[in-house]
Length: 48
Image (cartoon, rainbow, N blue to C red; front, top):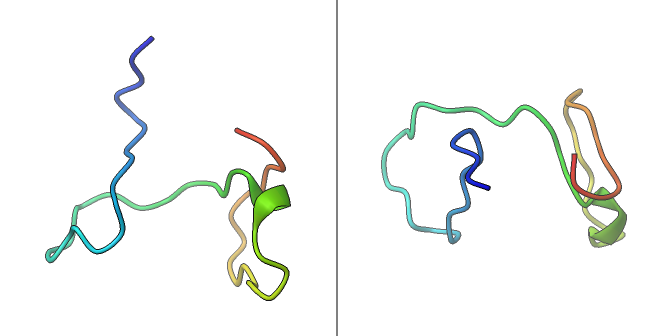
C-alpha cells in the first residue's frame, strides 16, 4: 500500500527546504537514551 503522506529520505540529501514538516515521532522506543526530543509532537513507541 502506498502512502503519499510518508517521506523516507536518507540523511543529508536535502539542501533546500522540502516544504513539509514532521507531524509525529515514530519508533521513539528505539531512540538512543541520550537523544532528547524537544518539541510537543506526538510520540509513538512503534509506528504511528
